[in-house]
Image (cartoon, rainbow, N blue to C red; front, side):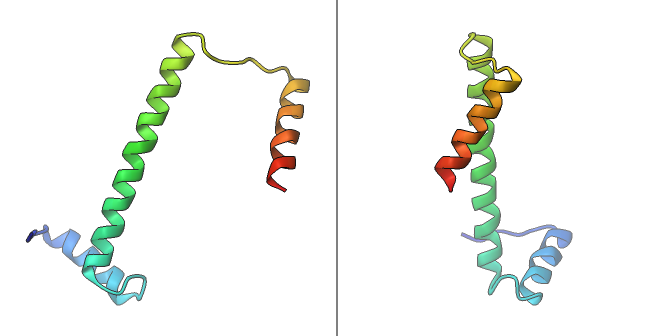
Length: 78
């Protein structure tokens, strides 16, 4: 596959390689597509969350129950 980029994008890719952040132009493009894929996945998750909210599938927390919820998460991550 061969892709031509506008000069500003080509310059950006070359700058990222020149900075040492990436070892090649291909690595920059792979990283960009990886981020695009992750962005689209997150958008789908957000949309699913909104659908759950609209369907009434959520839990409301008080200040106390939220503090307990956060403490439980922190304990599991420690």
